[in-house]
Length: 130
Image (tube, rainbow, N blue to C red; front, top):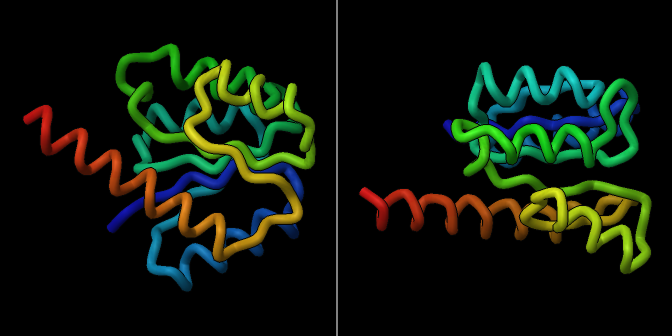
């Protein structure tokens, strides 16, 4: 089963995303801060990470940078989830290694389309490289 790590400090938002993903057939892990996200990414090697950018302990930019700096977690696609909607914010997300970007409030059909596309792209890369 495909596993998605949801990193979100707001419990209501985290629970809502988790429920929607489970309904869509995904296994879900959750973290409430960036440091826990880095640890869970290393321990569990999820198939994809949804990363809030405004997090305590380590923010989403720091956590993504750490995840993308390690060989074992670098290939994991990361979708930035953020209320920061300016062009500079989007560029900053991509600069630290995010593979996609979604603004809040989250539009679930669009987010699911991005998730499926990244997972499919990941599977294609793995197949081609083996």
